[in-house]
Length: 313
Figure 1 (cartoon, one colour):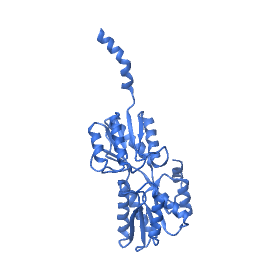
Figure 2: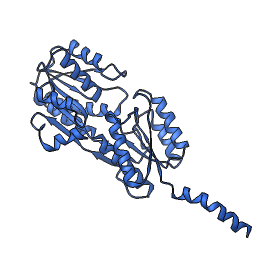
Figure 3: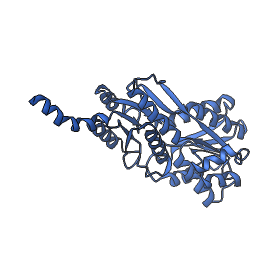
Figure 4: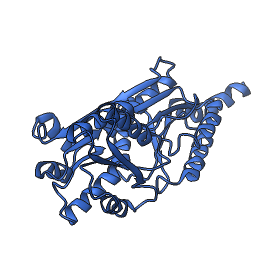
């Protein structure tokens, strides 16, 4: 009788925990505040969380250079009992061991945006960076003569995603322009907030380039600012990488300041990342690699409804 009474007393406390929604940690590269690229990832993740009935707990370091802080946040999330963690690794090598250590503890893991070195996590969700880079390199080659100088304004030495797209772009460009001269020694975001300075350095150091590919969003917008400030529109062709479509970029394409914008869809990444995590928690099969789409925006397709729809994302 006493045992039965104790069980009856404990039951109300047990029911909420049994019915509690699964907790999924979303660990981004930098704070979003629902603005910018990481804000779009978080927005998509929360939409998927609401749809699937899971709680999304989002965290991020102050900037994309805070590798140590991201590792601390990862360990804290695991200690706080997250059922799964969706993480965009700042550095694919530095995060490999910490993520593997969390996986051993039974936490389900989904990697987004930047593929991880090794096999610590079973699922990757993100842009096919090689395909996006290849498309950028092929477009770059079409814009210049075989012996023209071109430049790549790189993103950051620590970012595996942009490094993959840069390598693919170079390979595609050299496939048709083996004698082409490519300057690729300047990193726009090696240090946060220096993008305009590095973009200025590029146009000053290489005044004869006929085309520039900026491989990251921050570098793209930094170079666009330099083009506008220094009135360099038309001096060289300009391909930028980014996400969705902003009025500023649409205007730059329409005016000729920018030749093309290769848009990733980070909201889709957040949605698919959370869906993959929920499937893992349910024991359902999940593809090892889940690619999200990218769109090449030019003056020729800018006014198409599917492109204009990117403005509202």
